[in-house]
Amino acid sequence: MKCNGSKGNGAHAAESAFAPAAELAGFLMAHAVWCVSDGSTLTPLIGYEKAGKRSVLRLQAKEMKKAVEQGQAWIEANPEAAERAVVIHDAYATIDGRRTDALVAAVRQYTPNLMKLQIVLPYRPAGSGRFAVHRPKFQAFANIDALASLGEAFFRGVNLHEQGARIWNESLDQNL
Image 1 (tube, helix red, strand yellow):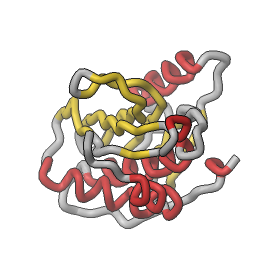
Image 2: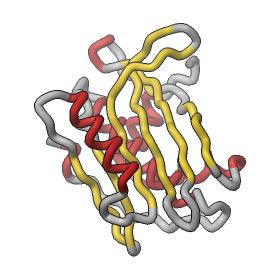
Image 3: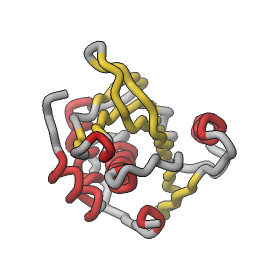
Image 4: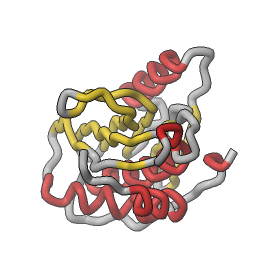
């Protein structure tokens, strides 16, 4: 499967204590875009960084709901004592009163203080005739110190994933 071989390790910006987590989220979200761009459903995944090393776990379960629950429990418990982590899954979101496919990411920066964010990335699936990625929605902020630089750090991470960034840019539809 194409989604199993991507690696990346970018430099982290110092503009915000949350910037490294936003960058990790961008990288993993670009990876998720790459995975769903051919019509596949994303296998929920967790990405985390600890001591400068990035790791990615795929969450397998008989039911997708169980895999998502495992990811949510993992990110809350932080069993690896990670510095930052992201769990991403495929879902539906209601935006402007319309139900749409979306990639949903829970983002955590555990150090120096716990900071949280949710990112919803609406997309139009490939099965609809033309795959498209819409603008990310940043929501459910908690203790984030520099909101102004959040988007910059996130898109720096997106651009670290060569295949995902290329598909994202070719498929961008900013109407939603």
